[in-house]
Image 1 (cartoon, rainbow, N blue to C red):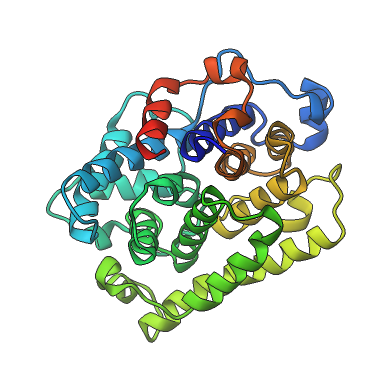
Image 2: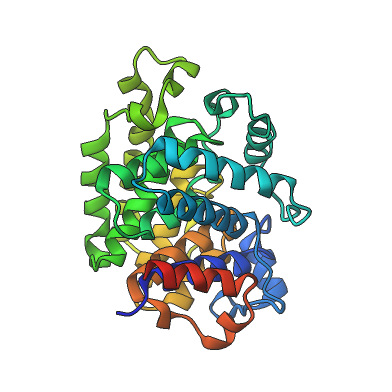
Length: 333
């Protein structure tokens, strides 16, 4: 396989663009407008949403931090915070951005405010794990650095423990797929990882974030998030035992507006069609839920698994931000 980072970054942008016009629509409404789901074509032009915009923001911040030396919270937080605020201020930030990101980035724009005071600890929207792919793709990170970075980049906006856990689990899934894990083994790998991490509070990355919630201890705070993820992995396993490729995946694993459901429903789309990446994207885009984020994550998984050659050249040529996505792919491949 060649180019898992390129494949993953291009895949997430393609899924994002494919699902952009279908978001907020029911499956019957989508098929009435665009035809049967298996024939869904990439729009022209292929505009992306805030999902890809914020993935690129994280990628830039992560690159800057890693260029300065070993990755830790002190190195990662300032450049990623700066990129998130720049996204918030940008006139291009008009692609249906999430309220949690807008609220948190507005607070982060005050340089005197500690980031944990900006974090939205009550929000587990999917806006943090939809953008975390760069953390799973950047080479040279230890397992602890990857987990800490995934959780911190989430916590800057989505401080709910499920946002942290789902971001960590998403980055881990992308990383192991890029390293050659078999798709059929992925659910068990994710379950084992979630159990292993269930009471690990990464204070060196998260500081006193847990104190902004109502939990009695940092361990109980973070366990809430991992338990949500383990619960949705149960639903994923049930869906895979009796798969129905023609049914809306949201019926099995949730509509994807919240972090753990976006992860599980994207995984379901990918695992229904592990060697058919375009079909996986189409299945994610033609759902009754958060179609751009579901297809975005499905594309990240499929591209990490199959590499840069997974995607039709004609689609890649017209995706928005193609040159920057390819440049990060080259850097990390």
